[in-house]
Length: 356
Ligand code: ADP
Ligand code: CIR
Picture (tube, rainbow, N blue to C red):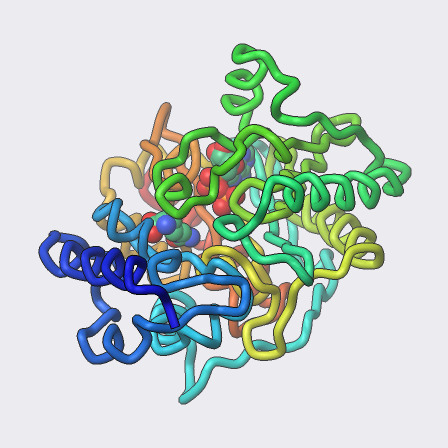
């Protein structure tokens, strides 16, 4: 059971959640009944309901609002997590299920846009965490550095086009850092959602990025998740980007023990990234649809796509560049998530062309 001081903070957080105006899934699903049932609970690593809800309570603009301090929290606090997972991933059927991993064949996907008219660049990423460690808010500085070292050792074994080098975040000057963020290779510092979730302790220590020689394979270490494995390049050749992604994830998975559960698939800090943990996105220019944002939103929704801004989540659309990706990651296989995105983005491109 949580100590009385923490319980006081949990009660206070709940009261402020109830008082604030928020569209978050946290606010919607943390009913008084569920709150009373789970507020005393604590995981073996010391994770509490405060760790789960603090980001959403501190940031009323959250769309989701919860994070898991460790793998066990997904079971201990499932009365809150399950309805959020069901709604975000549009889980069909009476219970949450996730199929076994299936990367399928990259060549069931194609190239969006051979003439480079719409698609600026294509990116496929997944989240991975290491078995045996909790997530951000419960990690010690030593554990961050241990995880970093284990990942760097594994990255060292990548060869051919995947081979590259690791750079710790604390080795970058402010200018280098800003340049890498602007070119979409590096994560931002100071994300208010992560900060409130206690995910930025000891920053920038234990954090960094790996880049292969042409920056088409990027690995983020100890940001939101312990690993984000990213394949990206300019243009719209989704098949090539996905093929590289699958080769990198498979090679790293042969060495590193990824945190996984049969019900939820790959385990991640944010419940939106469970399951396949895959987000496949294009940066895309849609001048006609831009003039009709409700039509774009409606179409994206119909194809289970999510629209983000030009600098990622919670950013604005700049220069007419949208980030469009699959929204569901759990309850379908990797290749199904990719095909869903491929069909949806292709449909959006056709619609844009019809508006000419
Ligand atoms: P994540 O993809 O890791 O969930 P974000 O939405 O914050 O998180 O995006 C991370 C970075 O990746 C941002 O700089 C974003 O602009 C960039 N990005 C996303 N999709 C693409 C793409 N198709 N091409 C280039 N950069 C991209
Ligand atoms: C939020 O709740 O808005 C942030 N904690 C981020 C949630 C992840 N969002 C998403 O759609 N993948």
